[in-house]
Image (cartoon, rainbow, N blue to C red; front, side):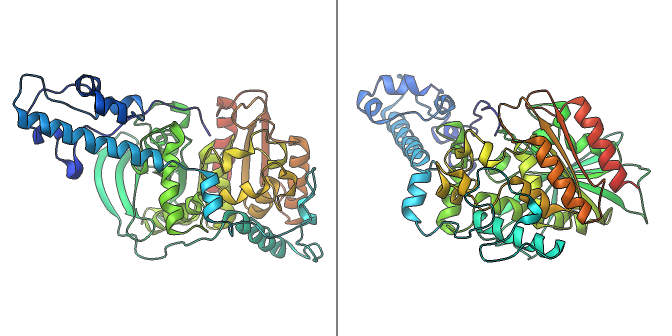
Length: 453
C-alpha cells in the first residue's frame, strides 16, 4: 500500500456527461461554501466528503432569477445524495463479516498455529503427509491459498478488444486499448510495441505485464503519462529494451476508481463486488483480471506467448506474485517491495480492514500465527519458474518482511528439488520502499536472461 496521494475528482458534470453549468443556462460558477452560506438548513445537512467536493457543487450568483436558484438547490441536493452514497459505500470489514459469517478459511495445515515459518517442502494439509513431488506440492499450496482468497470466476469469453488512441514515438508505438474483464466490464490499458528489437524470435517478441503500485492514476504512472515516477514507468522503459508491454488499471484504480471519503474509499468498489459475489475477494479478482491481460498479450501477433513475464512494485509486486501463482503462462516475475509475511507484519489489517483485498484473512485477526499459509508458500507455488524478489530492509510500507535469509534458503531448497537452481533470486538492500537503480539493473539482467535469449 502506498502513501495517499491527493484526490482527483471527476470533472464538474452531471450524469450522462452534460455540464451542470450548461444545465443552468451558463450561470456563474460558485463554490459550495458560497451556496451553503445562503442556505443554513442545507449547510446543517450536507457534509463534504473530500476537498475536491467543493469543485462539484455549483451555484448561481445572487442576482439571478428564482428558477435558476431552485435549479441550484436541486443540484446541491443531488450532490449531497451522492456524498451520502459515497460515505455509505466505503469498505467496512466489520459490515462484511456481519453480512457474510460463512466467508472464513476452513483449511488447517502444517503451518497453522506456528509462530515461525515452516519449510515450504514440509507443507501439507491436516491429516496428510508432505507432498511426494513438486507438482503435488504446488497443487496443495494453490488450494490452500484459494481457501484464503476465495473463488475465481475467471472470464474465458471474447476479449472484444479495441484501440482507443495511438501515438508513435522514436522507440515504440503507444496505444490506449480496452478489453473485457468480467462479462460486460471494460478494462483500459496502455500497450507499448517496440519499433525494432533484437529479441525477435520467429517474428515475435517477449512481453511483460506491468502492474502499478497503489497510486490514484493507476496504469498512467506505469505508462509514464501521469504522476511521473520515472523508475516505475515500466511500460516505456521495457519497450525501449525490446519488450511488448501492457499496463492495465487494477480494479479500484485509474479509470476504475471510486471517488469519495478517505483515500482508501476507492476500495469502496469492493462493496459492489462483494454484493455480487461475497466469496470472491478483490485479490482473487485482481488475479482474474491479470489472466485476462495475459489472454490479450497472448493473442497479439507481435507477442511470443511462451515468453511472457510480469513486473510490479508494491501493490503491483504482490499482484505479480498472486498472478504468477495461479497463471503458469507467466514465465518470469520481477517483484519490488511486494510483501510482508503475515506472522511478521505489525499491521496485517492492511489486507482486510484498511482495504478489501483479502477479507477472509480477517478471520485470523489478533492470531496471525493461525493462518494456513504465508508468503513463502506463494513463492513455492511459483517454482520452478523464474522469480526475482527485491526486498527493502527499511521498508515502512511493508515493514518486517520476516527472516529474509531464512526465506532465501528455504526457497533455494524448493528450487533445488525442482532442479531449477539459479531461477530464484532474492536481492535485499538497506533502503526504504523503492525500486532503486541497483535493484533495477539486477531486475533487467534477470529478465533479459530469461525472456530475450
